[in-house]
Image (cartoon, rainbow, N blue to C red; front, side, top):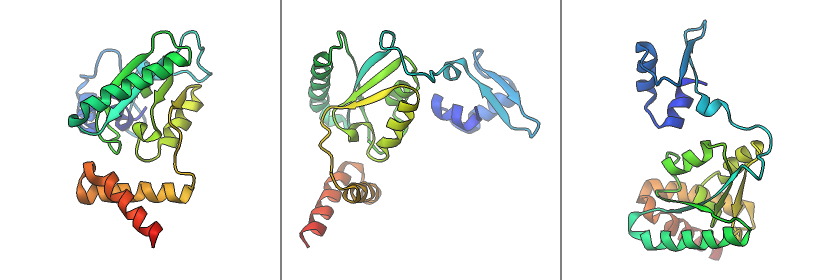
Length: 199
């Protein structure tokens, strides 16, 4: 894989990884080759063994992923995790794993979520709502997992019915996050949508 891709998966700065490639100081498990064009290619067994066939239900893990956007909502995070665990047990999962994370849904560098997505032994990820996975483009994550024989289970799937309204909410949330900060973005986007709908 390319240096930039591996750096993203491992949460390193690409410049640092290029330096390691040049100096020959990459981790032992990683093989680095240089293409005729001069580009470095990284072969890491950690990522090269991802399953392409549907995961065997006997060996795949089911993980509940709970997320809140800020640290002052820790109590909500615990309640969300408890609801997910109860749902998983209701699905027949004997000992569901629970991963809790604090971070914005707009942030694509959430370590715990990225570890789950990169781990081929995780066959099912359970989330309370689709926006707990990602504020925008959660469908892309679902499609990528589906191509590997994995899946996302959404407990509360009562999303906006209208695709245009959902797209508008995502765009407004993105712009509001930049203008007002991430914590107030959703509230501002919903207020703007309500005002547009009432007009």
